[in-house]
Image (cartoon, rainbow, N blue to C red; front, side, top):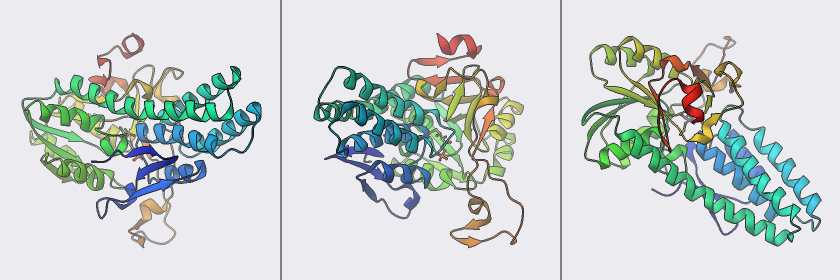
Length: 343
Ligand code: MRU
């Protein structure tokens, strides 16, 4: 598959995830405002993918700046950074990616580079971040694959796959790596209401790679665990607090509680850029509230009674006590997370 996010000839290239599985369409974005809009509308989504896309948005802002004054250039980039940061609040990778790019711009401005040199430096950093994301996912996959059974079933929630990253994926990277090692893995994919990332994206990806997958509705997970059909759970993360509490797609917490009840290991696969060491616990993670139409409408068609009260939090927080291990690019982290994540 193509990279989910890429940079070519001064343009950010994205696979439009709102059109999968019907069609695989690539978008070419020329401005940081187009990148911000693609993040809000979830044409690009998934924590690592929006982190790199946000960073590349800053590259576009630098390319299109007409100023020759370095201080004015940095101020312009910082303003673009604010616009990009104001798109989605939960995944910390977005803020990490944008700040990494802004820090590089600031360092270049301080050594009195020319505007052209700064643009080139930011483009090179963008290329490096794209390659790094793929390498990190493969490393997560290698470490995590060891945790999966030689033959068995894995439940996942939402999409933490190639489509949520530059390529390969975190939770699905673990599954891919296990399959590459010769393990026989069957995946159960929660459909993931309300936006159905599990059914639309995870199933699409795994089927493209000929990895056996069965879609189930979110409320079926418990019964499949009770019937002994799930050997472990692997999910991604949008932000992990320093104590190991994990924010991920709404419904992840319910899956973790069910896994705990059935004594099934619950693993979180995420790059270290997803860990927010500034937060003591998951209580401080901002949870995005998305449009109520995501709940009340299906394919643009109203399915809920007119006027019904709706809430639509897009993420939930799974307490560290329900997480058996966090799989990172540096290795598998076990509790106590407060101490071991730092290490
Ligand atoms: O709202 P989304 O689709 O961006 O949510 C994505 C998730 O919750 C993923 O599990 C998470 O970002 C990890 S992706 C490797």
